[in-house]
Image 1 (cartoon, rainbow, N blue to C red):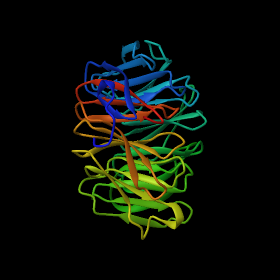
Image 2: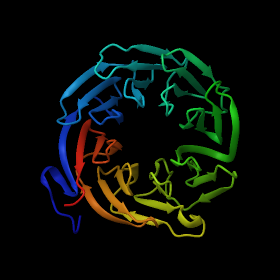
Image 3: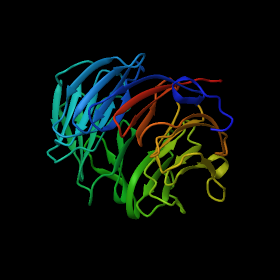
Image 4: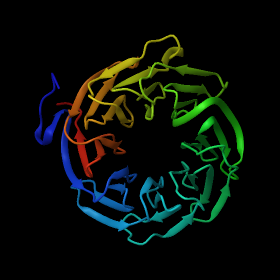
Length: 350
């Protein structure tokens, strides 16, 4: 990219490749251990691979599910890793175990999403129209009333409440019994969800190529339109003031500072050559990573208004499925359609 210094391994600007590895099938999901020492990858063949974060050495490779792995979630204390699969099960693993400590049946054809409560006391999973809850020891806790259609996304508001999105509404559910406490209705299919870290804003990408958001305290809602494609990726920064959205071959960033984003112009981050597939903010700063179907990975340092300066780029590889920053905000992992797993260090200065 113009103005960025080339580095070894194909990176530019702040990005320097730490290591590259390969998995045997299409990688679907990736997550870090909470202390940043391990990287877990689930693939379409049902294999769970765990790599040492420092050098990419294989720590564990195990056939975890019959059919693909659809989601991974480490417990907040790092004791457990939950994997969700196309076999209708959630499995709990220790970091380097080859046999699951528990297999939790969702009594469904597949489990698409899984997430731990912030205090680690419960595990939530979305399986079709149903929300399932288990205690940390694997004992069943609750199965909430079904939605009218598939749950497309879930997030914990806090350790007592879960937020789910799907067709027609966002639902706030009690973690004790899965019951709906409150719903925010929308006439359309919601395909993605991001909850601001301060829990004040709920944002959803919609099938109709809009982003809809609600202010939780009042239920007031607004809509951002004009996206060329469905906004399947959304991300808030840690301050809850910036919302990055996909839905094009550029990133649109809305600022919630000073009463926005209504009546304001968003920041537009251009540089990708194809549709954005993933977005992620580094912990504790306004540094955004964006990835696209052309294999490009870009890093931006943003202002409070949502405008950005390109500070790092990787322009090689196949379509990127997912990206994630390590907990320290100093390195990015990416997985792509050709089975590559890479970790890139992101320096503070060139």
